Length: 108
Image 1: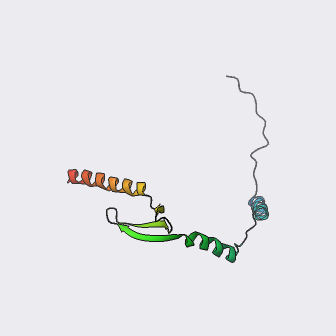
Image 2: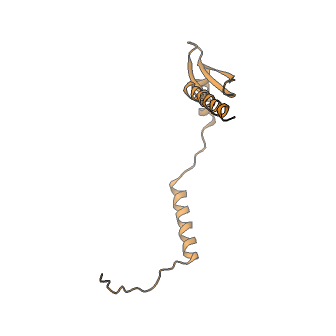
Image 3: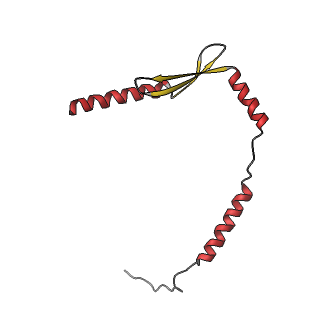
């Protein structure tokens, strides 16, 4: 294996002052790119009123998983629009608890 001579002027070092200056410049550029806006309170209230006028909330506890469940229900049709946590996730949690229970029962 033939390795040629590599010429080098030595390691490149950047001073901490230069790093600090670059960081400050990057922060300033990010500040210029990002403009923070405060949401209009009237607009927010209007949107929330539209959402809540046609819906109602139901709160309960799923005793099988010892968890709090929230249901958002459409007032006109009485259908569940959203359930938090979802029914599928609750079922999964129930099944996992059962499986863990079986495993622990057999270990003891």
